[in-house]
Image (tube, rainbow, N blue to C red; front, side, top):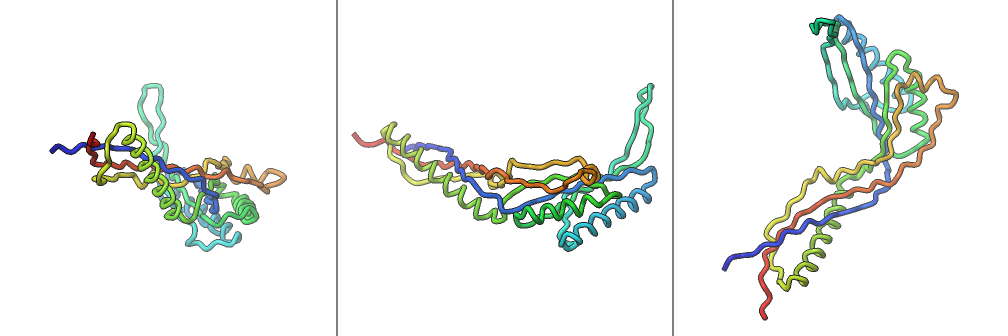
Length: 220
């Protein structure tokens, strides 16, 4: 007898309270000489690291997110490219428990970086990502099972064993929609008050799970 299949997508949802702050810094440098460029970037990074150390971080807590070296060109009226130098774009981040007082300490420390003058972004997340993912999975599986039962009753079929479950674990990453952007620390430093009072929105995380059942027609 041919086996019939029913595939249902369950949607797991969870509202999570942010308990972690992540600050991403971007340090840029340009120079026509590659060795000078590296030296300039190192000096800027040293200044940023020293500022974060004053704010209570170890140098090892400043993690590189990306590091890009590009060649810079300009075009003239004949559409020919002329080499004008090199550029470095270095993105780094630190993370710590949700604490607005510490956040302000970090921002004020980084605002003193006149040479590095890093642009930065503040975002919020959850520390225990595994637990959040588990909640989403349980919710998604329950939703799929509920939908399958409704379909089975309406279609007068009987669900048998599950033959396949698939999901994309990358979907479970919890990222808060609340984010604070600032063009550069130097601009912030010129303000009269650098204290920031932020209450981020809760994180609405979601995960899809596809479950396939074998089913048979109910006997009359």
